[in-house]
Amino acid sequence: MTFNTVRNSIKDGREAPAGEALVVEKKSKFYSSVWSVNSEEDVNKIIAAEKKRFPDARHYCYSYVIGKAREKVRAADDGEPQGTAGRPILEVIDGNGLIDTFIIVTRIFGGVLLGTGGLTRAYSQAAKEAVENAIIFRMEAGKQFKVTVGYNLSEKIKYFIEQNNLEIVDTAYAGEVVFTVNVAMDRAEWFVKSMSEMSASRAVVEELCELDIAVSDE
Image (cartoon, rainbow, N blue to C red; front, side, top):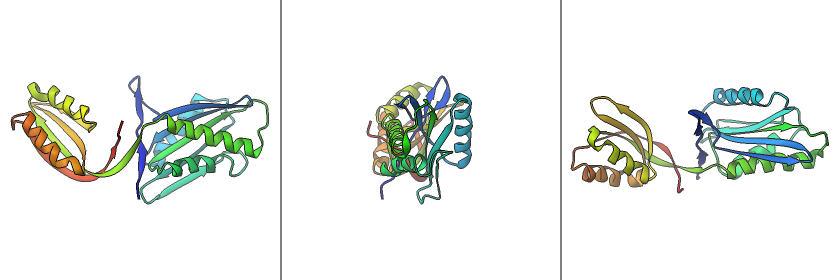
């Protein structure tokens, strides 16, 4: 089975949604955002922030799937008629094969009743558009490496890693520069060889562990 996920963005130095959208239906506004989450604690923090952002909203509807085995799944209508909000949002998550993903759609009432069909369509569309505005990553088996290089080679190595769409999960600066890099399993051997060739064997590459990693074609 193929699993996908999203990655949160960074705006003004702070974590931001992976994707956002706004759908207007008969003057009601549906603000949607999709997030990468690892726990229900992450979910609760986002909901609290959303309530501060839109204090006049009537409904904060959401769904999430956490874990490859779907250990934690929830769909919440938050006062909307049962099945008109949380379930359509969850169907968008499942339809894209997403895990460790949370979508929240906040509704600001526009004064016109939409009916159950209209609500279902609006919540579904808002969730879809938020996902469309995010980059979807495939979850693949991979390896994590530690690459230690001198400062004179660090920018060259960093540029190579980024140009090849590899993920640098940490950078440490001390006597030397240490990059922690996630690499897909089928590129691991190539990566080690490339580090050696680029640095004339001066880069020290250590395999740390095997893990699932997020890979994007963009």
